[in-house]
Image (cartoon, rainbow, N blue to C red; front, side, top):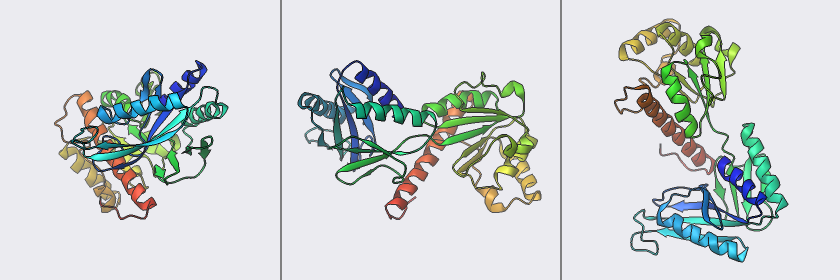
Length: 325
């Protein structure tokens, strides 16, 4: 969304109209779901994607029509083999094509406010309708919601991953996490491993004793924690504090021997067995990762999966549906 609204402002400044294409509903097998967006102009695709392929090509053709007519529209894309688009996906996407005139004060103001909120990591919901100017809401549904007339999208401020340990694996992990929408904080007790110049893409870099996490960083129940410190004792110090509070996810890098040692120390310290069992260790998806770069991909893959599970569960709860996770 950040790239789309930055590009939109640039386009409006050049005196060009635009079309914001948003998936408002998706059924069956589709490349992207509700909330996926792209921005189109007189030269076609400018930013974003709703999945590529023939479906996106058709959406861009519809966007060209909207630019000519100067009127928003709602269209359906049938992604079925042998259908109009001859796609093998086997599903349907309904897209809302919103015409944005270059002289729209409302859209220009909204784009600036969206970007300001994203920069400040301040949440909110974007409400889009065929008629009238878009608005920002302070409260909204847990995820994208379409009622047939209005689409409400949460601003993607991004979930936060706190990495404990600023070593070579953290160096590889931070940019990969950022590339898929996570906010990242790095926590280390060594000044040479906890400098902003070492992690320019991190939102925060904290140099503070591992024995006092709360003194250096306020954790929330929504945070994902990744533990990759320089040794067994530091892992224990960090895990003991993390497991005594609610967190979205705790993952620890290490061998079975290291895990058994630290878990034994945690039990001696009185950490409940249930809390110990919720730790993801060895961390990451099983791709036989060896190098720091491969380990970064493995960990990121697991975090993407955990994030998706939570978003699905939140969406099911919002709509009163049972979770099948």
